[in-house]
Image (cartoon, rainbow, N blue to C red; front, side, top):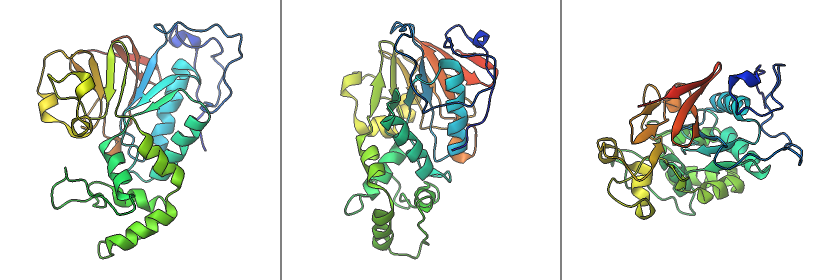
Length: 285
């Protein structure tokens, strides 16, 4: 796996780990953890990172992971907002990277997106259709990108092929570890100040009582509500030109599924910065 070489300096941010020097290095997402005598950070001082919808874009994921490591070191705590697959060309490789990192003990937390559930449901012993979709669409439709996901596993088919034949081929070629990863994904992750989920929440409903369909699919009812929620909601799902802070929510989906740059952000409490090659850039309402 290729990791671009970058140079960083501890002067970029005071929370950068003490072993970050100005010398160029290759980001080591799977490198060993610091020595046991490293002074532990306090829980409240430690930054928390988040990554928007990836959609099979391996190179963009590697780029953002390098930015995170430059800011927070190899043990940075990261929340992924879902939609790891579909549309982009490298869905299999993206899942390989995430699963390998999890198995290496990375402090990474994975939220389920609607595209991840569509993939998971298609891979049931008998394929399950996402009823939330319009009648004319299915997961394999190019608009949704399941076709490119299966292509990353070596499947070749046309819209004239029978679904059951494509499904049987997928069952033979998609690793069981990928299916287990998809089924294990959480719907939410939260801290004292922040609530991470893929699409958003139903305003007025307690966070503990949110419905799975809303967490995966909601748009207008969530986007149009300007009231403060119990916590700052951090989400993806709806592509925007740039990551945006709306006061009561932050949207980090910047259209990687359509060839646009993937976004990484860092939080300290409710304060948010975007990560760039030149350091942190404050994201404010």
